[in-house]
Image (tube, rainbow, N blue to C red; front, side):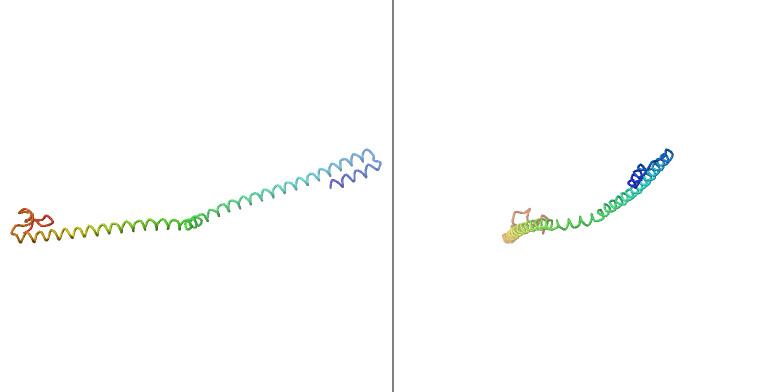
Length: 154
């Protein structure tokens, strides 16, 4: 557009021009330039408006994607827990094995204590039988009246 105006000026300069015609030509060229500038400003305003709309759309998309990313956070946590589940199960199995071993030791101790208790109970029973046979109870007269558990006997 501006090139056309410049070409017209060259053509007009080559012709002899009167002062009134020259003034009209200048006014016309100013009007033409003003029109071209107005068109360009209008185009720039449209482009600016388009860019603003695009910026808003992108902002909405970013906010939406940020929200969607948070929707999957619980799933990611569950997947991460399952990944750690093997290590957790190994620790649990080790604790269980240690507890079973401790239980086995306690059972052995209990078995030995029961055997000792049974042996002592037999000795006491033999002693009572031996005391009844002699006429005098095992351990003297006070113990004869009491049973093994300390309760008064016959």
